[in-house]
Image 1 (cartoon, helix red, strand yellow):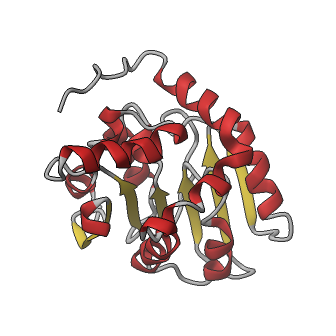
Image 2 (cartoon, one colour):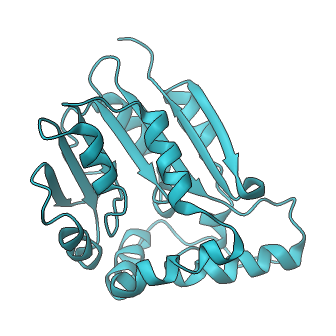
Length: 222
């Protein structure tokens, strides 16, 4: 099926930031439409966190945390002695995340680009429905896996439109995600091979006929 040309990397980050600043207030409401067609994003997020094998007292970095849908789940997993850092470009999205986590003192929110931010030394790194929105997902994965403490883990959950789907189904799926900032280039990405090059996968799953993919693993010992 015909597709528009890829978005140039120059300006990509500014475009994504602008989209999420503009749509942050309605983002969670928009996501509420997805279960109506059987896409259970909340269950997929919980599967990603389970694959991360978070322990009490861990520090978890959530890259592209958006409006903070993962953050209460992560805060519960790390407990009062742990720490959760939510990283995102969008001030609008982080404002919503701040409301969602206002009673969770172990959560810290940081506005920054994942390619430039100080990622610290987390025990676990999570990215859900965010890496495909970035101009260079592999560079982000490389930085994140280098930042992990020894024996740390990383999990990536993301959306994609399989090319094997009928054209009309692809078009309908894209119509749902385009208002959330997706482009065809983003929507085609399967990030499991990217993650596998840096953290060999011990979890490799797909959901909803391949429209959501989950990979998790640990970088080689160093």
